[in-house]
Image (cartoon, rainbow, N blue to C red; front, top):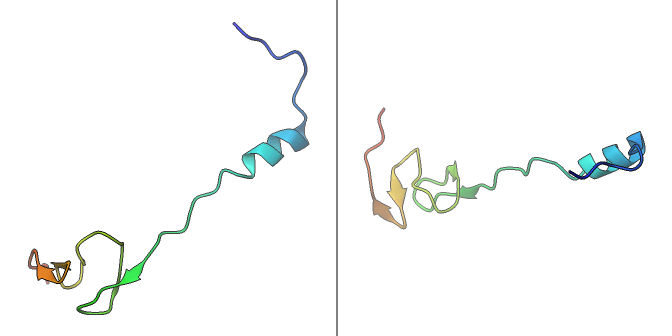
Length: 59
C-alpha cells in the first residue's frame, strides 16, 4: 500500500480543495409560460416540453 513520504501542507490541501465547488443550477425560460425551468425537462408550472403538453400540473 502506498504511504505518503511527507505531510501535505495546509496551504496545498486548501488550494486543492478550492476547486471543489458546486455549480450554479442552469435555468432557461419556458417558451409557453416564461417561468424559469431546468433545461431539457418538462416545465413544472405549465407541464409542457418541446412545445407539447406532456402532463397536467397539480394545482
